[in-house]
Length: 274
Image (cartoon, rainbow, N blue to C red; front, side):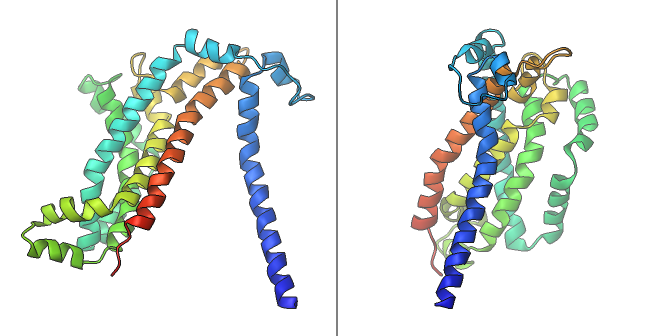
């Protein structure tokens, strides 16, 4: 009985802790959504959180006054391009590091990921200025790849290390080269790791502020930079700011929810038995 009571108490404590953490994470997001449907006066009135009449003026203003659709397109194109480029360069690099035990190279890539991004801003700015690439998709894609590629590499290294070496050996016996075995055998069963790293890399690029602040201009301004349109010296447009924040957050949530099904399906249906 004592053992059962201990197990029950442990389960109750665990559930309470989960709910507390969940509430702490959900409350700010809930407040952001509610505030996006309020007027400036209603937002500043903290005595009445739920008693208000929703309106869509903030969202209308975001798309009419601030042309947010252009910023969404810019962010999406840059995030997709930098994620694709990160996968194109990162997957072979991760496989080579895992296969040939290149721990030194892996450590160097990890250091590049740990170093604050602001350290690269001046070199990036000088290089792209001389190449006349400031305010171009090329500059932003390459700079965001600096964030996405090391992350993809470090997510995929353990994934490749866990694969049986017999897979590549079997492919080599059937006549494949190392590259052929990687493309035809290893990558097709690496779907879960690729999807996971792609989602997170996309999110990092989508939310990147620092590189876009320096390298973007009017043509390539992204969503995090566009949020500054709601901040002024004398006043903060809280309604517009909250609506813009919802617009920034919503695509990432939708993508994560959709891709989660494929991650689970890949983990359960594509498992490799040794």
